[in-house]
Length: 165
Image (tube, rainbow, N blue to C red; front, top):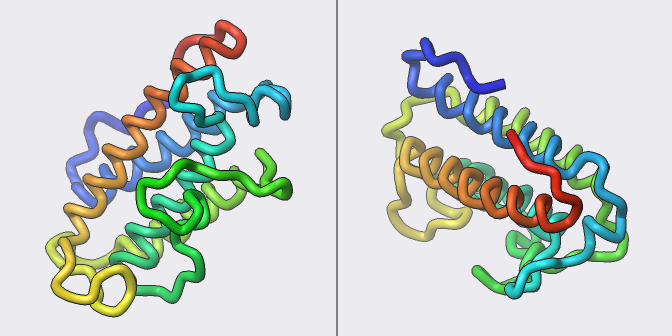
């Protein structure tokens, strides 16, 4: 369900759209077999489960490690330690485990996104010098979700013909 179109508070609007995208990802992956989750049907080679893992790590990199400067081992574990590297899965990565991590990220995001949206990212995590504002980070994370959910639409349709929200 889309966020309430009467939301006027920017913070709540950001958080509502992030929640919407997380649940959209879960809906789009529901019903795919483990083989379909791990198989690419695209020339670029990524699988739906790799995309899910990327979203988990992308949100952590920007909100937890980036804005909050929380210690974060292997921030690029979704891409072999390389920013913008090819996405990778471990044999232990599962749909249930990654969806739980995605939803836990939503809980942590709500804890982080409480102050001034104009606040700058803390120094010492992702940023060694002045980082972007929380508002900028939230917009960036939202555009990442929007882009990747659109890509997931195509991957799902190629996998089994399913379309829709």
